[in-house]
Image 1 (tube, helix red, strand yellow):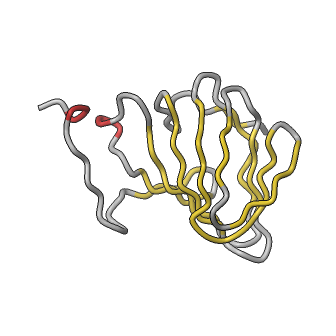
Image 2 (cartoon, one colour):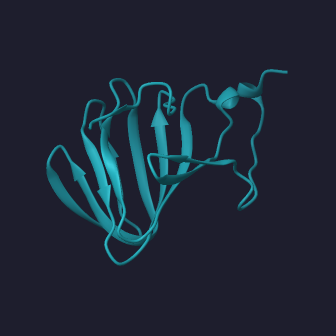
Length: 123
């Protein structure tokens, strides 16, 4: 049966996790189930920097679940705190920085973006 046409229900802490450039990411939707968008939970520790990256095609939506930090979007800094929501258009260079607190983000991409597809990190 086509997973892209099936209901996906994920219990807390059941999503498969992986580390990407030192950042813990929970993949909320299996890759096979992603037709229109992908969904992740991004968890950063205190004093962590997510390397600058961009997506050529993927548009991103972020919602801050908890914690605080800074988003650097095309060179402009935005203070992040619980409840903040923001959109990152395609080709926007983005980086995240935490200081004393961790940062917990809900992240959606459309069309789907994966670590091996439409993700470009800068050195």
